[in-house]
Image 1: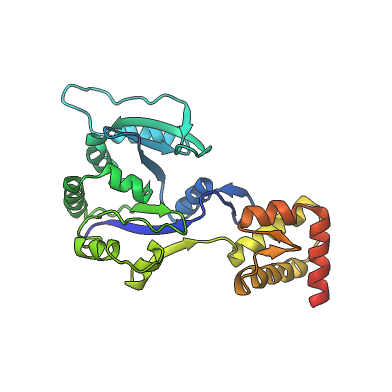
Image 2: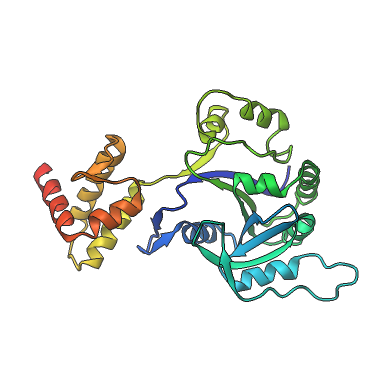
Length: 288
């Protein structure tokens, strides 16, 4: 057994999320705070730039510098690379900017090994994990994690993709998910999302889905704070319950004929509109 854990997370990465303190966050910010709350100190996002190059991105510059410090030095290198203090796009087509550093793919395992004594999260998409690690790399990673099994630090490989992802599952270390299981999933011709295929085989997945009860409740409290609405919590809870029942339990994606596909729609189209908020409060009052 290795000291590292692999998790599958499926979420709408373009949506907004709310913290316990009612801060409005994008997906990367929400992930970062959630991982820190779970005891992880560093969060690294990886993407494949081309056949030869990997990009690692971090929320803050200090983390990126730590990555470079921990990366193994070559025989003729006496110091580590100091990354430029500039932000780059996390992914093409994604406006999210993080601190980034590029290095050869062949250095990825050496660099990861240098970080296995720290409480780290390594974040990949399905495609980036497949593109970065060759089958030989996967076998080496398995041996590396096995050698590191006595390390007491928390290490997490987070494989993140969109909720409706129905593409291929990348091959993972044999100790994490045997090749025969990955092959069986990838040859499953039943029309289901990858998350559904994994769950059908008893493999745990996390769905950071829109409209969870806690997220709706935080959104309502944030709205009341925004409009300086004084409430003892009772009205906010009733509105939260109504929205959860309407959007999730009944599966109705429309509120006042407005299409609400995600939390961003609910917050910006309905809750931050004074007239719609007034109508929503009246509807909930009438139902009670």
